[in-house]
Image (cartoon, rainbow over all chains, first blue to last red):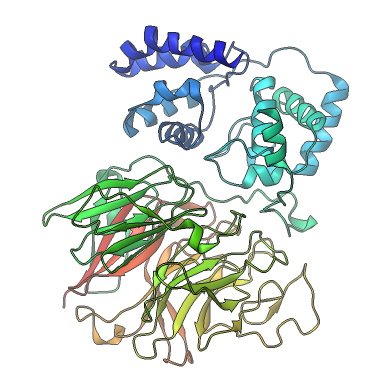
Length: 190
Length: 388
C-alpha cells in the first residue's frame, strides 16, 4: 500500500509538479487544487481541505513542510523552493475561498458524544465556538472527517512533527473511538 | 509501523498547557499568540511606531530571519541567532552598510540556545547540543555532536533553551518545568552549569519555572535571571520575576511560591514560601520577560551605566495585554530598591484587542555602546543608539 502510494506520487511529481514549479502563482494554485480540490475543497480521501483556513495557519504549515520540519511525503516536492512571498500569496488565496458543506449527513448519536467531548476538551477555546479556526489554529468545521481523525491521532501519538506541544496535550489519552466522535462533530458543526 | 507508533506513544505524561485552568476560566479563549514563520520585508516593519526616551533613535539593523530570537556575537562581529519552531540557527554578517543572513543549521527541535565560547558556536536544541568550531572563519565547518555529554531530559514543554557562558567559563543551561503548574521530577525547574565539554554538571538553582534570559552583574559577577510566572491564575499574576542568585543552591519557589510570595492555588503547601529567595523585582503579570543585559557601554547617558535592560515579549494569558517592550531596571548591586520603567515601547497598539506588531525578545550591547534588540515576531534586529 505504502509503496504503491509512493510510486504514484513519484509519477505525479514527474508529470505535473516539475513543470509547474517554474510557473507563477496561478499555475501553482492549479497544482494545489489538483489534490486539495477546486478552491481548496478536497475530494480526495486523506487530503485536507484548505478553503477558509486562517492565513497564519496556512503560512505556518507551508513553511514547516518546506523546511522539512513537518514530514508529508506527498507535499515535499510541491513546496520545495517556494519563496516566502509565494507562501503568503497561496495562504491568502485559500483563506479567502468558500468552504463546501461537509460530506454525508450527521449521525445523531455521534454528534451528541462528540459535542460532549468537545466541551470537555475546550476545543472551542482556540478553534472558536463554530470551529472556524483563528490565527495559527486551523478551521475544523467542514474539514474532511477521515483527515481530521488522522490528524488528531498523529498529534496524540506524537507522530506529527513540527507543531508545538499544545495538541498532544489537548488530546492526551483520548481513545480512538472518542477521536472519531470528535471528528464527526467538529466537521458537521456549523 | 503501527507497533512502533504505539510503543512511542506509551508513557508520555501530558505537557498540560491548560493544566491549572480553573473552572471560572474554562471558557476563556486566551491562547498563545501566533508567531510568524515567513520573512517580513523591512518595508513592512513599522519602525516609526517605536517610542524611546529623548536622544535615543532606533533603526532596522537587519531583517529577513523568521523567528530569530537570542543573539550571540562572535569575535569577528558575526551574530548567531537561535529560533524555536523554525528549527534554524541564523548567522548575521555585518558588511558595513548592510547585513547579510544565512542559515547555519536547520531541522532542529527548537534550537533557541546559542552561545559563543573560544571561537566556537554552541547550539542547544531541546534534544541536541552541537558545537561549530571556528565557524566565523570556516562557514562550512561540520558540527561536533555533544548531545550525549549533557544528559538532556525527555520532556519538551518549557525545555527550549536560553544558554550563556558565565565569567567562570561554564555553560549555564536552564531546564524548565514541563507544564504550566506541576510538581516536576528532579531534572526539571532548575538552572544547571556545565564545563564547556559537558562534564562537571551542577544544579545551581531550583524552583525556577522557565527562565529565558540571564546575565552576570558587572560589579558582583552574580547571576541575574528572568523567570516566567504561571498561567491561569488571572490577569493580575502571578507576575514574572527578575531574580538575583547570590549563591549556589537557592530555591526560587516554583511550584509552591510565586513572585513576591504569592502561594500557588493548585499546589498548596503550608509554609510554601519558607526558605524561598524572592525576586529583586517583579516584571509584570504574564509579561514574558526574556533577555536581559547590564548596560556597560559609553554611548548611553551615565544614568544607564550598570542598569539592566529587560525585553518583555508580551503576555498571552491575560485579557488585557501587557509588556511588548524593553524595560529599564535600576537596582542596587545587592538587588535592593529596584525600579522598573518602560524604555522602548510602541509594539503594542491596543492592549484590549491584543493588537500588536512586534515582540522584543533579546538584547545585545555592541562594542560602540549601541544596543541591538531582536524582534521574534518580525524576524528582525533593531539598533538603539544615543546622541546628545
